[in-house]
Amino acid sequence: MAYNLKTKIWQTGALEWWGMIDGEDVYLGSREFPLPPEEGDRWVARATGEAFCIVDGEIRRSCAETDTESCP
Image 1 (cartoon, rainbow, N blue to C red):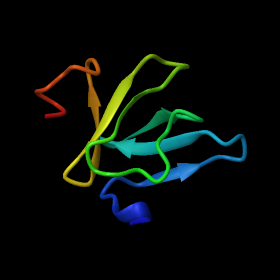
Image 2: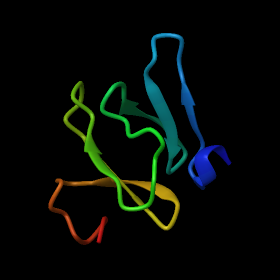
Image 3: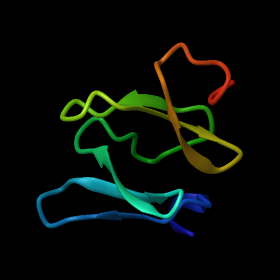
Image 4: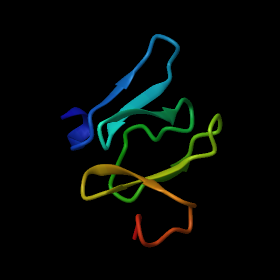
């Protein structure tokens, strides 16, 4: 478990962060990815516009930064 996360994450040689979410490889961002990732962090991957948050040690997709259903 990297950074005490339940979600498997890795960084490519191009310094992009990826994660395994719901069985698929998902782009998490590059500079916008929080380091170190901590509970409650929220960010938007600039390249895709997809929003993420960390809840219960797991990276989750959220519809928007204000989405309280996926990311309380």
